[in-house]
Length: 420
Image (tube, rainbow, N blue to C red; front, side):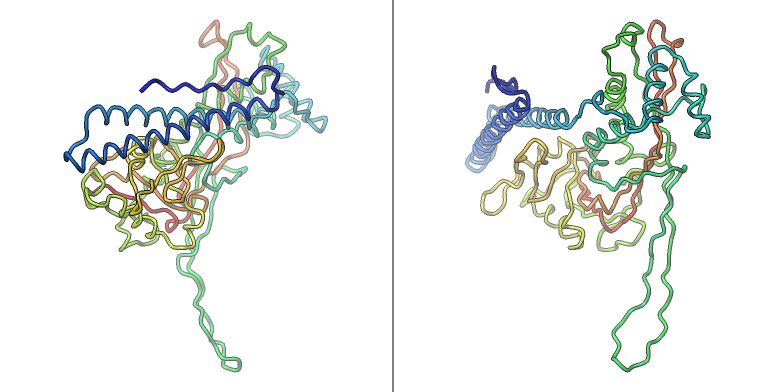
């Protein structure tokens, strides 16, 4: 099979606001054709298995190449969607004088290291923990843009609940046992109900850092949009670290990922633990009717949570599931219908998180649930940058930090599929 290439350049004369649409349509068209080729090759493989009890090596290799092409096309769609959603920061004009002053002072600090303006502004605001040692707050426009971009490229953040706090942690009271309730006749006495039993969940905000570098020549370039440059430099580093922490983080110096909590067989589920469904085969799907365990996983979740539920897995597990069909011969996995939409599995959105474990004995490789209700991301307001022109001369480093926490807030909203 020849290598698939995707042409995203708009034809000459196409209006600028139509160029992104043209590129998206081209990639979507190629993606659809690749999936049709994948289905044809997989059907051939299944036919060979039925007739000869084994698939031809050439067919397996062809299927693997098409599968890789599908992953590459999805990555292109994600990138196009992200680029299209990015507004130019340079066009954002602060609405008040203080914001304008802060932006100008920060620009001077980044380009030339002049911090007097930022010191004066933060002293006026009575900000604690600022200054040369702790860095300076970036303008709100940059902070908002970084958080917005993280929501686009950090898979768990995109589907979780996000709360902004001004303190070091977020505390939430949850009901372990609700108040007693019951039916009563119109004139019957009303017995006193028991008080609800409450428990407190705490989500501390941990420090996450990135250290982009620039040459002084680049910083001296007046055309350079400092806001956009800094946001683009830190977004990927932050997103990569967050993506791992929200899935497997141990809660020590980083958020606690949902796979780090205690688990229990779903039949014995109890609050404070995540329920799991076992596949019945170590490190693999069952040999017979492998998709049945996916139905078991879906219906392990209560109906109220299924309405907003998503599958979460990495691309290698997704590759194995692409081959599954239902009883009528329809593929359970379906490609996205638009650049900003997710692929679906059995009608539910599929979120690709590379931090999820591969297929392996005892691994919880697939999660399914309403992460909006199940997982909480806590952002402490304030993104800081410390300019360092000395540690890596001739480069200028920008030690940029944000504080973020996370953890499960509703243990009934997430279920796991364990390959055991």
